[in-house]
Length: 78
Image (spheres, rainbow, N blue to C red):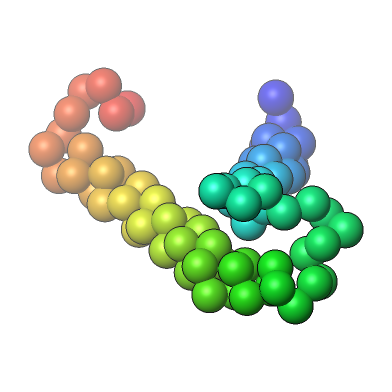
């Protein structure tokens, strides 16, 4: 698979997971109700910080794993 195509699919997958993280939960929010003031409170105060924290944690763990594999010179990481 070509690199631009892989990058495009990765970005689409990331956006889809973020969107699903915002609408799925104890109270499922439909796409039509996203801008409802009652649901905006749930999204902005509960779900968005959780999704952004998970995204930041995953983004910070990946380079650390690469660094650890490089420092230990693990042959499986080549």
